[in-house]
Amino acid sequence: MKHGLQIFASAMFFAVIVFMVWYTICGMQGAEEGPEDPGLPRGREAGGALSDTVYIKISQSTEVHEPEVRVKDIAQVHCRNKAAEARIKALKVTSFKERDREASYVGSVMDLLEELEGTGSSIQVNSVGETDFIISYNPQIKRRAALQGMKTAVVSAVSFCGAAFAIMTFNNDANVTDVFGNLYRLIMGAEPQGITVLEISYSVGLSLGILVFFNHFASWKITVDPTPIEVEMRLYEENLDKALIRNAGRKEAQTDVR
Image 1 (tube, rainbow, N blue to C red):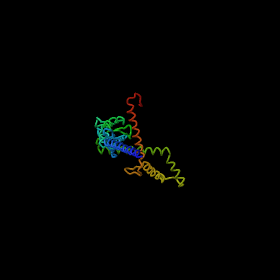
Image 2 (image 1 turned 90 degrees about the vertical axis):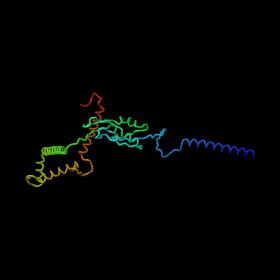
Image 3 (image 1 turned 120 degrees about the vertical axis):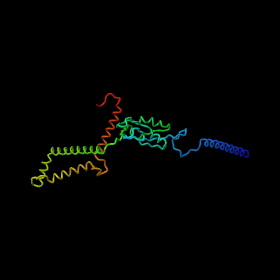
Image 4 (image 1 turned 135 degrees about the vertical axis):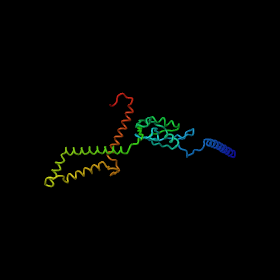
């Protein structure tokens, strides 16, 4: 019995020694690797450099006033690494040679990816905007106020005369004068003498209806919604941008719309 207890005690002592040696070896390996710092951002590479993700949002159409165009002029850039973000923003996109004339440039985000990623070996670009974009160069040529006022007056006069002519031809085709005369006879029981309340109400109502429909009078708007003219202008700009992008993509084709 005594001999058995000695064997058991020796086995336990040997097991404790083995455990202590194993624990010491594991602790030394952990000290060499270093503790994991939860404050470090995820994506740190073996060489110690950060794997930065840069988010870039490019608008479909942008107007610039300087011949040298950088990424910051046409896109929104965000990155946790501000140094990488600054390098991306300062990257040159294009340059307009004729500085005194208006021009446009059609580009693709694919053309920029290689250059953007080339600013740093650990940069990953994620585009969340348009795939194709247009840069319109306007050199901001100073125009005289008198010339601008003259142009505004001419456009206003042409619009007024055109609208008046359209209204008159519509009234003539619909024979509004006879319709108002018949209504006046039915209601009043007498022949109309000159301008009646029907013509006056029609003229006032037509003017108010135009103002309400277009939701715009000088700088005053009835609601915050865009006016029908603004909607049509935005649709025109969108269709124009699409046409420019498609024309740029077909510049090498032999057959196109004439």
